[in-house]
Image 1: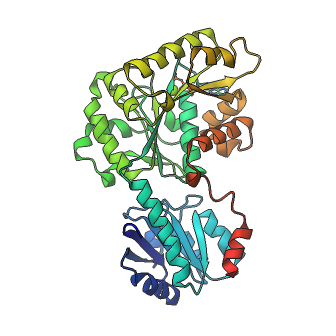
Image 2: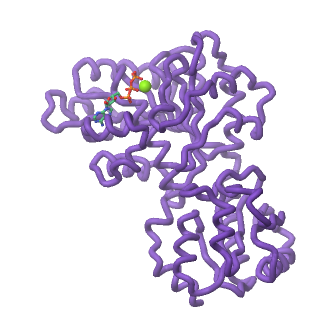
Image 3: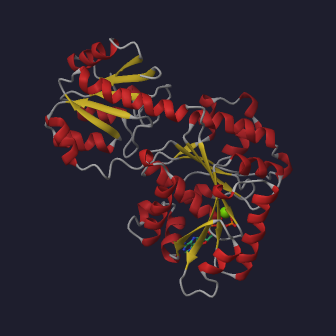
Amino acid sequence: MRHPLRILLVGRPGVPLSEVEHLLADHRQILMTLKPVVGNGQAHFLSDLQERCDAIVLVLDRDWRATLEVCFRRDAPATKPLLVVGPPEDMELMRMAMRVGGRDFFPLPVGANDLVPALDRLAKEEHERHGGLSARVTTFMNAKGGSGASFCAANFAHILAARHRRRSVLLDFELQFGSLCTYFNLQSRNGLIRALELVDSLDVTALQGYTQQHPSGLYLMAAAAEGLVLPEDVHEERVAKLFAVLDEAYEELVIDLPRRLDRANAAVLDRSDLVILTVQQTVAHLQDIKRLSTFLTGDLGIPLDRLIVVVNRYQRRAEVTLSDFGDALTGLRIETLPNDYQGVSQSINLGIPLLDQAPRSPLSRALLGLVESLVSPRERPIQPQRGPVAWLSRARH
Ligand SMILES: Nc1ncnc2c1ncn2[C@@H]1O[C@H](COP(=O)(O)OP(=O)(O)OP(=O)(O)O)[C@@H](O)[C@H]1O
Ligand SMILES: [Mg+2]
């Protein structure tokens, strides 16, 4: 192993748990913390894990239903890579293990030759992921008001959390009139503003006081619920400090950024790995996206390959065509999202992300495709591609 792997070993006290504990204790590269599951006092702790660890090994016995109930909130998977060990040939157990985010299932009795190579692979992944890198930042900005940046940011972040199981937070930088809470039917709170105010004393633990969690696992740092925040009150140094803490806590930061070019927003754009500019098909949008992209690449020095233009509510027969955008924005990647007025309105009004509300709609598929094209192959969803057959064959070995 390239670097020590911090493992949280979880299970009901008993023979299976002790066996796995002994097996892992022999490996110096594994730093193990044992967390016995004893009752309901620990409700849902794996869906909302506080401990620092790289992976979880969950050991289940015949009473696995009770253990899963204690460990996971309904439909909210583990927030760290999860390996499950449990009784063999129980299809229902394997299905449930997949549902809570299990990457691999190992039937009891488990041998060192099964579990340790799987942990080794995880260690390598963690090593690569932490190799001087920090959270990936994807920022959405409208080229013109009302183009759909907030909707796209919200649903992009939701897909990253729900489908790709990435530990993701959505930040509402529309500090004065932010409304992302309503897109998820969550209570409005001053999360981001308070976090920026108190950023000097902020750490990963304190951060949790300023976020809300959606059942999908996505975290939201909301904007103002009350009072008025003036853009000049938000300093770029504070934004940078906040990012440093968020880097430690999350893999993905998705930002809804208002179309205002001040120093704080410039700091956000500068730190962004990807800036997604949303537009619609009118001449006014075309003019604005041209000016905005010139400003971003010229004045702010953002490389072309970090910008993507998304033509939202795209219609093939519109007067302003895709090739008009292509001609005006040479060298920029241009994507389209279909028009779905009813689907989008329903999703926003009900506070249900589109993937939950209409998973098979053309717009959902296009959003899934957009996210998939931007994540690396190993961050792609494991669960939907892996049928019970793959699990079954492993269980038999
Ligand atoms: N793909 C789409 N198909 C149909 N309607 C859409 C689509 N995307 C967005 N809309 C519509 O556009 C409206 C505005 O989108 P959104 O809520 O994202 O605000 P916004 O563009 O961020 O606005 P602001 O500039 O005020 O921040 C939505 O209420 C929705 O009705
Ligand atoms: Mg908006």
